[in-house]
Image (cartoon, rainbow, N blue to C red; front, side, top):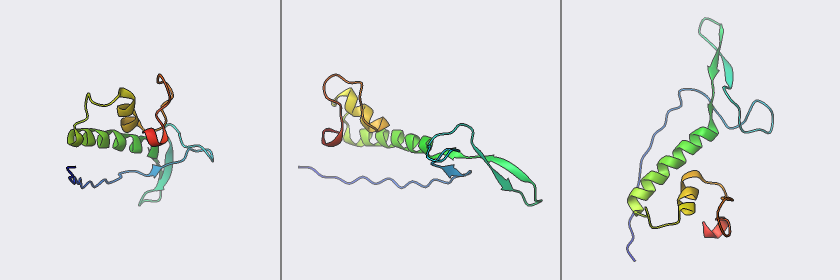
Amino acid sequence: MMRSTVRWDVELTALSSISQKGEDSGTTTTLFRREPVIQPDGRPVLVPIVSGNSLRGGLRRIAEELFRDVIGYEQQIPLSAAHALRNGGSLTKVTGDGLTGRRR
């Protein structure tokens, strides 16, 4: 068995607030959410909030591309497995049993 270690160092800087919840309690999505930020002159300005969901999705897609480059599984695994790596979550629109839990 051949083993190897690959490491990526990544630094992200948020230029706006990041939120994992919507405007209503218990929700995780919202469009064009903004929060007031007080400026040095005392006036409030509405600043956009970046969705934690969109950030996580973007990072997942980048991670899958890096992983695919290192492992070299392109054209060697079922499309549903590649989809699970890239998009996460449970797959329900597949023929046969869904790709969940240990099978993933």
